[in-house]
Length: 304
Picture 1 (cartoon, helix red, strand yellow):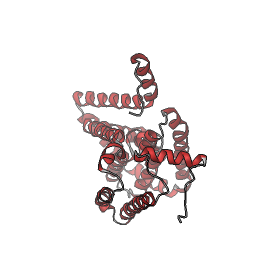
Picture 2 (cartoon, one colour):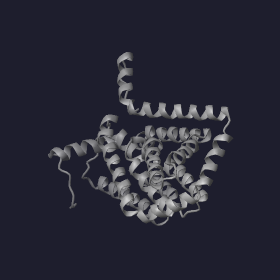
Picture 3 (cartoon, one colour):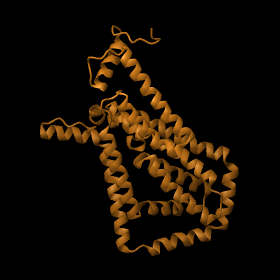
Picture 4 (cartoon, helix red, strand yellow):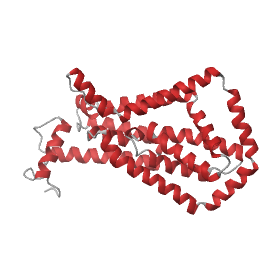
């Protein structure tokens, strides 16, 4: 006798069973059968195993995930053909590959360093403005290119600032991570989980923006307000060092602009155009798919 039995006559239960059958691509299996319960228990156990390994020894997480994947096939939880066909979200994987490839291209073009230098220049020696710009940059990059990409580039910027201003950047790194986490929720591309929900739930970009972007933006504003209230000592110390090292910062900014050739500047501008085009395409994804469906007469899935 199992502690949890899904009732096929219940409305929620019938929907759950229908969805489960679609996921396993087998409509002959009873979800309450001994075989199904054993498979579900094995899958849950392996999943928790991967989570536990990731928590205690994060460097082993890939090996743990691969081991669990092999065990899922060996134990017959998922047939190999179903694993390749339906268990792997190929649209999600290809989208992530494309996004990370684009981020690498933009980095090589110098787009992110260009943005970072302009953040320093626009702050004009104000510690509050500098913190707000760094965190907003982390928020924006996380939303547009993903949290991993964001924290890498923003951390590089923070370390560069630490060298110039000769300050302890631990607090700035922590704040940048918090801003990255809030920004990664704003758009589907910000987080693999967001992309998964976007594709699996068949959400429109409008729905995602309505719920996730609004909440993410509010959280970011609250973070900026908390910094001004709780981080006054840090702001004062940075302001003091900023004033003392302002000359070095100005020299760094000037030398950067003088070192850029016209060809490099043209490539940076091209990269910015590519980045804006990518952002626009993601935002207008649903409308573009509807337009293509209209002119071609063939249904175009915005999540494909």
